[in-house]
Length: 159
Image (cartoon, rainbow, N blue to C red; front, side):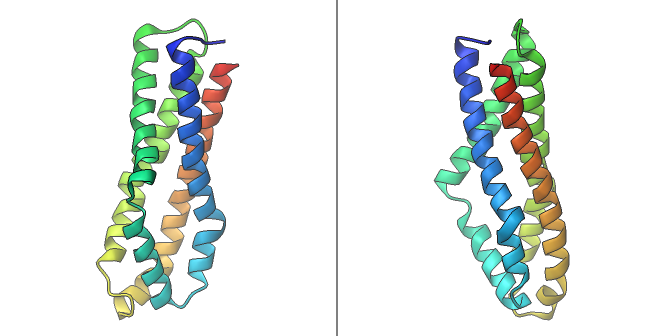
């Protein structure tokens, strides 16, 4: 079992990545389905509202804080190469940094920005909405699995 600073960092890593996995899981399993059932103008308006209000200090602290924490865990693990939990710590960090944080930056945020640029009732928004829901949800599934996988890897490092 790992101990000392690794233990504290890893427990925090489990908590952060697990919380983010839960948020993403909620979107993948019911929020996006509910929005997709709305008429396009209402779905676009609701998702744009969600995207604007998601950037709160509470969520961003957990989401960005987890990314920073995972980077610290990864770098410290790579530099110090502990006797136990090395693979799990590196895998957990990579899963979150690339599969959750990275995917957010390259797949979900650009879709959100494109949607925010469309008026909810416009023909362009109506045409884009089904494609947005499919693509955004697909990449959100990736973020969910990656965040949950990171949490699991960190738990395994603690064992």
